[in-house]
Each structure stands twice: as C-alpha cells, then as structure tokens.
Amino acid sequence: MLHGKIATVLRDRFPETREAEPELLAYHFTESGAIPEAIPLWATAGQRAASRAAHVEAARHLQTALDLLRRQPADSARAAEELQLLIGLAVSLAASRGYSVPEVGKVLAEARAICDALGNVAGLFAVLRGICSFLIVRWRPGRRRGDGASLPGDRRADRPSRAPHRERLRSGIYPVRKGRFAVGARASRTRSGALREA
Image 1 (cartoon, rainbow, N blue to C red):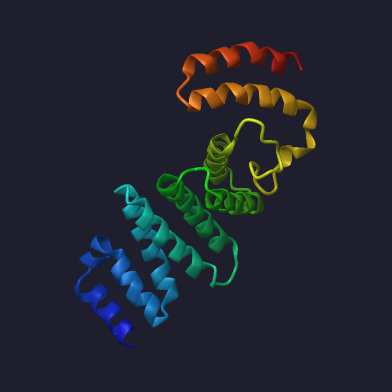
Image 2 (image 1 turned 45 degrees about the vertical axis):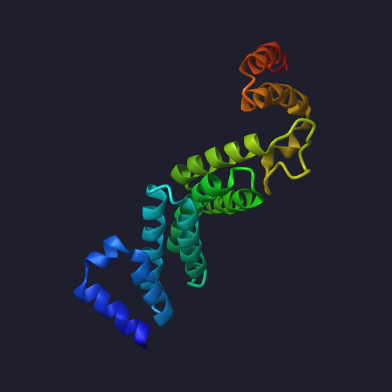
C-alpha cells in the first residue's frame, strides 16, 4: 500500500522522475503489485544504463523486466516485448561478462526461439548477429560441435560434410582474435580455396 502511494506521488507530482530515475518508480510499482506499470519502466532503466555503458546495471534492470513480463499472460505482444528485452539483455551481458559466457548463449537461444515463433525478420538479424559473435568468441581450436560451442536448436548440425572446411576456415579466425593477423590472413587465404571447391 505504501509503495503504491509513493509510486503515485512520484508519477503525478514529480513526472521528471520517469525520465531521470525510472528504476525508482519501477521499484515502487513492482513492490505495490502494479506489474504492468513497472515493466516498461524497468526496460527504460535498462536502456538508459546501457546507453551510459553501465552494462551490469542494465542487465540487472532488463532481467527484472523480463522476469516480471514472464509472469504476464502469454500472447504475441508479450513475446515481441520479451524479444526486445532478450536482445538488450544479451548485449549488456556480453559487454559486462564477455560474449563467451553460457548465459549469453542461453539468452540468444531464447531470443532465436521467439523470432522463429513470431517470424520476426528484423529481430532475427540482431539475434543471429549475436549468435555469430557468441560462437566465434566461444570457439577454441580442436573443439567439435556438441561440446558446448553450439547453441540449442542449431540447424547446421545436419550438414556434417562441410564441417572440416569450416574448421579450416576458423583456424584463420583464431589467430586473428589473438592478434596474430599475418598468420590468420595466411591461414584463411590458403584454406578458403577448399571451401570453394567443395
């Protein structure tokens, strides 16, 4: 009851709070049980934190918005909102903890499933770009598909004949990631011909 009164006073008498400190208003709405009002405020707080490169804070706010949203009835509008929160969360997790942490892969896999369900082409590009970065950074020489480097629902697993060629091309990417650009360029040039011939 008290939190509801505080949220109402902040919203009505101090409207600048919504812009300056949306997390404060979101907190009081959440504690008062006004979840539909709290969710967009948590999302805004996460976006504002990410714009300041405060990605730990942004991930916390976006995760709170996501948790609250998932308590709401499921429909296509909720799924679209969830997708945007997942994309923002993946970016902030990657920026604060690194692209290769399992949480990033999990969030991206959830976002990919929503894209597939909604047929969301615009969101799909951002998700696939994140998945690509996740897989490139997570990959290690000698690691094969299925030992933690791939995402759930990976549709490329049914094309094993090209796997050796991809492995050769990746051997050029790995040295570049380590700052050995000449070695990576040489490896990519000498091995890319095999993929074109296949």
